[in-house]
Length: 357
Image (cartoon, helix red, strand yellow):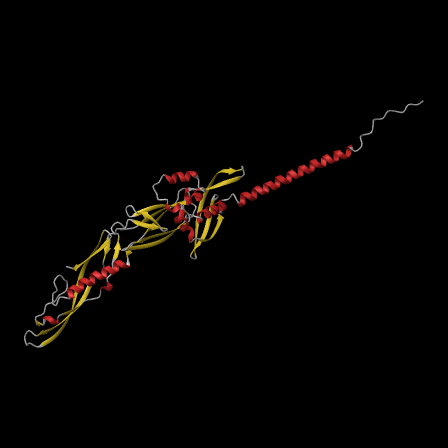
């Protein structure tokens, strides 16, 4: 009886199929991982390029300003910049509330973009009443969010200092101005305020006797340094109000009327007068004084000024010729000058008129 040679047992059914399936899963998983990483890289790049950028940060910063939310706007600044700002004795009126909202109210058609020549700086373009402006907004990134996205923060250069000078304010009795509708006290005829960039700043004085108004657009020039906020200086010129001009003319007219009421050729206390060799009929003397509308009241750093006080009057009268007794009707033009002094006494404006020497 012959023996059948021993042969190894056949492989379990289905084993080669499971191996091929497992390898396919590994390949698919690896491919999915590669695709996920690639997609993740694209997503990170897109988020970084669209959201975590100086331009996007600048737009969010500006949105907070248009809402008048100063505390929210301050959150976009580097804390070190804020610490430096807090150490200076400067009025912060324009950094919050209604004054802040008014500083942005006239700014239209805003556009934001990256500065191609300077990393970490956004450029903001905008219009005010049809005129175009541009400002830079310097930023820095000290840390990242989720290790990928840079956190951009505005530097101190995006907050400016505004010095407002009002020459002669103290001499004119002006101790306060309004900035974007809010009162600001003057010290040594000036005030210093801190403001965001950009800003529209409207300055005004509207007292009974003196007025003045100015509008200034605060921008950061691209050609200037980025380390510190630029200082802007405004000079607000004061001028006499309409009420002050009216008071001047009323006082001069009253003075001249007092001179004209005297039926003499040389009125007492007045700068006009003539002599004649003829016998004058006193009751016929009549003075015609000039109108004071041509006089103007000006204001400068030294105080009130009244240029153009040279005037001319006309006197007419009847007389008899000194030699032959003939009746005459005389008319003479008399030039004279007034001395006008103007000063404040409390809230009153004092106008003193006299004849010039």
